[in-house]
Image 1 (cartoon, rainbow, N blue to C red):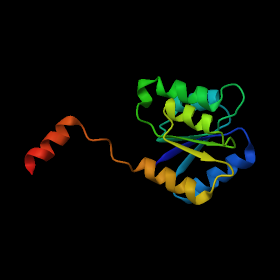
Image 2: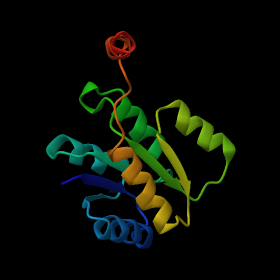
Image 3: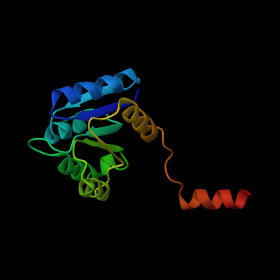
Length: 137
């Protein structure tokens, strides 16, 4: 079963996202700030992270920077869900490795669709794969 780490310090948002993901068939692990999320990543298998931007102790940008700098989590999909509709935040998030940027209030269907797309995506083709396909044709 796919396990999603939901990181948000605001309980109503956290509960809503967790409910939507559980109804979509995912297991959900909860963290309420970036440091707690890092502890979860160290102790259990996680397939995707959904994180808020603004949180105490370690915010979403700091969490993502730490995750992306750790080879164990290379390629782990990350979705940022935030009340910030600032284009600068979306650009910064993309620059540090966020795969999707959704704004709050998050649409349940958008969240479920985005998670599904990211957990089922095919890895990018390698040069040898491209060469093999070209030679087979």
